[in-house]
Length: 151
Ligand SMILES: [Zn+2]
Ligand SMILES: [Zn+2]
Image (cartoon, rainbow, N blue to C red; front, side):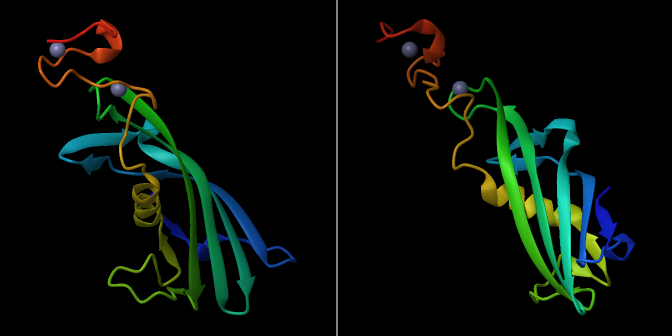
């Protein structure tokens, strides 16, 4: 799913609701290279609390981002924690953006999560923190050729 109707939430006595949702998320383009999410989406725990006509939405999950390591071009897979909050009044986002996440009680889940994942991405996507990358002269994988490599 990419959109979620907030009217379908059933609030308990404490005016809180919880739903587990799977949201499809399109691949990200970073520096012209495609990074996709494992399972092409993210599993999210949506929690809503209600006070009168106001809703506070919390989305929590972990996106697994897959694509080439930006140092050695090998396969990188990265767990990106997602935690986003949105405030809603009478079925509309409180923040008056051009493209609000919530309009007419419909949450644009994909847009919301996509922005949250993009914000949570590290500055560089690497296969492991200690990846040594490629030799700038010959392009050899310095993880494989070892310390003695030089020109
Ligand atoms: Zn690497
Ligand atoms: Zn070299």
